[in-house]
Image 1 (spheres, one colour):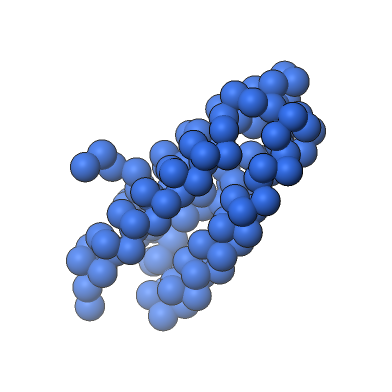
Image 2: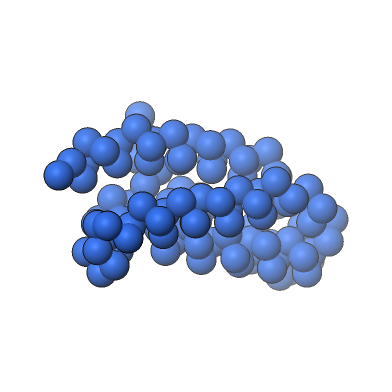
Length: 114
């Protein structure tokens, strides 16, 4: 299984905010990102909107260690800034988020068991 998550970033963030608050932060992240991903089709063909959404997703993904998603969003953001709102497809973003979320949900409890 390829590594989609930067577990050192998650450990760092978890240490910064405390284990008891981390679950709330990660749930908020997942909810916000899912909200953008569900509407990403609206940005196809609209470079400015795609750039804005890719920028948001890239930052959110970096913050919580979803490194593969961040990389895809960075590619989409740069392409959209140059007028190409089709460089990254909504399906590619959704697939990466789904795969990353599954890896996170599966491995988080093992990596950070009390």
